Amino acid sequence: MKEVKIESTLYVFDSLEEVPEDVKQLMDKASEIRQKAYAPYSKFSVGTALLLDNGEVITGSNQENASYPSGLCAERTAIYYKGAQYPDSKILKMVIIAGSQVNPTTTPIPPCGACRQAIAEYEVTQDAPIEIYFMGETGKVVKSNSLSNLLPLMFDKSVL
Ligand code: THU
View 1 (spheres, rainbow, N blue to C red):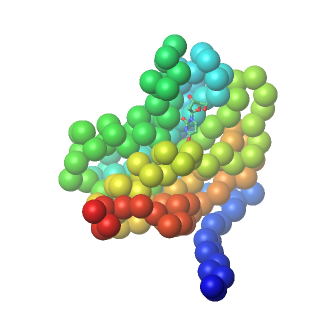
View 2 (view 1 turned 90 degrees about the horizontal axis):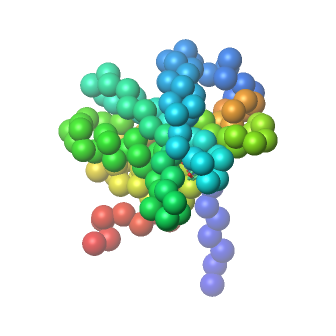
């Protein structure tokens, strides 16, 4: 038996003021759409924005349901819209802002496991990394140069 260590590199900005201007603009759009999240049950609102290589920006928020599992995260709401509307475009960047409607959220909120798997499908298919930035309502912003850093031991179509 041998031990295998898996390493991921992430970058942490102290605040939104430190990120590149185009990313800040995307985060502003994500923040705006987050205000329209439909999250009456969890009271946890998430907004996301995707920048495509055709210049389009796709935004999305989480959409909950009285039948809880029928709801969908912001990231998948946006990425499936992209898949439906712009199947041939590549995703260059994805930003996520998330937080409780009840308590201030100051720590960066990463995408959930199911969303990472969904994003992975697009990154693998487009054969180019997606830059991902995520944050709480305020505070630090975390950057990953690729979805693969957030999903080690990824299951993808190469094994099918
Ligand atoms: N949520 C997202 O939108 N994205 C994530 O990556 C994690 C969770 C949503 C789902 C649900 O509406 C609420 O946040 C609480 O889990």
